[in-house]
Length: 390
Image (cartoon, rainbow, N blue to C red; front, side):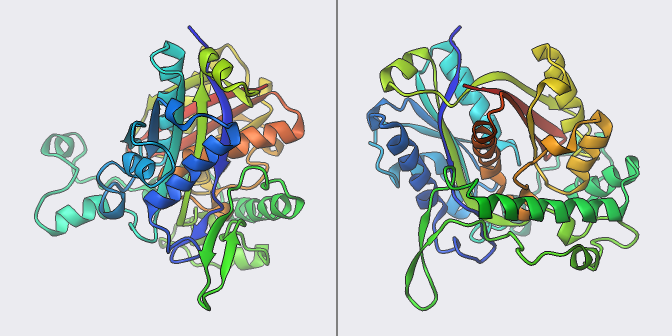
C-alpha cells in the first residue's frame, strides 16, 4: 500500500460573523483555496482525481454539493469531480482521511481535501432548524428518543459537563482563553501564518479594495481582566463567550497524493499521513471524545504521547483542550502553539484542514517531526490524525 503525502496546505484568514469575508459566497471562497493548492504545486488541474470538501450546514448557499460548486467556481476543469462530507466540526478532517485512504489504496493519485463554512451567510444550525420550522421534522428520530429520552443534544451543555466532570475552574478556562489570544497575536506579528494564509480580496465599506490576510477574531487588546468579566452562558456554569470558539467564515484545504502522484507532480512533500483514527463516544457529554480517541490512536500507531512534538486540539470551548491536557497529562507547551479557535475562529466545516494547515507549517517552522490533530465533533465523535513532517 502506498503512503499518503501532503504536498500543499493553505487556508484563508478567518472572518468574523458579518465581517470581512461575509461578502464572499462560500463556493467562491472555497474555489479560491482550490486554485491556490494547484498554483502552489504547479499541478495540471485536470490531474486532480477528486475534491472532498467538509461542510456542516449544507443548506442555502452551501447546499447542492458545495464541493462540486466550489470546483465550478474555481479554475479547475469540469472534469474534476467533487463530493461533500459532514462529520460535524471534524468534516474537513474527515475529508482528509477519505483523501488519504483513496490515494493509499491506489484508486486515486491526487486528491484535494478541503472545507468551507460561511457562518455569516448560513447560520449555525440552519440545516436542522429550517425544516423543523416548516413542518419537516427534526434529526432526532423516535428510536433515538427511546434511547435518549428527553435529552437535547447540545455542545454548550457538553462543554459545561466537561468542565464539571474534570473540575476545571472558570479561572482556569479564562486563563486558557487569554493564552490562546496571546499565542495568536505572537504568531501573527512574527509572520508565522504568512506561508499558510491565502490573502483574499475584499471590498471595504468605502469601496476600496484590500487583501484580507489577518484572522479577524484575534483580540489584540485582550486582557485577562476583560475575559474574566464576560457573562456566563448559563447560570451556575463555567463557560462564557470568551472561552468559546468564535463564529467565523473561512475555507481551507490540503492536496494529498500517493507515490505515483508525488512523482507526477515533481514536488517535495510537506508531510506524510502516519496514522488516522475516528471513534464514537458518549453523544450527551459529546465533546469528551478527543481524549479516548487520542489514546486509541497512539496505541494503534505504537506511539507514546511524548513522541508527538506538536498538538492541535480544536478549541470548540476552553474545557475541551484543558480537559484533554489534564486527562492525558500532555505538555501544554506543545498544544495549539499558534493559538486556536477561541482567538482564530472556528469556521465549522473548514476547521479540520485549517488546523492541519497550521500544524504542517508549525512543524516545519520549528524543525519538529510528529504532529497530532484531534477535534470534538457533534454526536460524540472524534477524528485523530498523526502526521510526520518530511
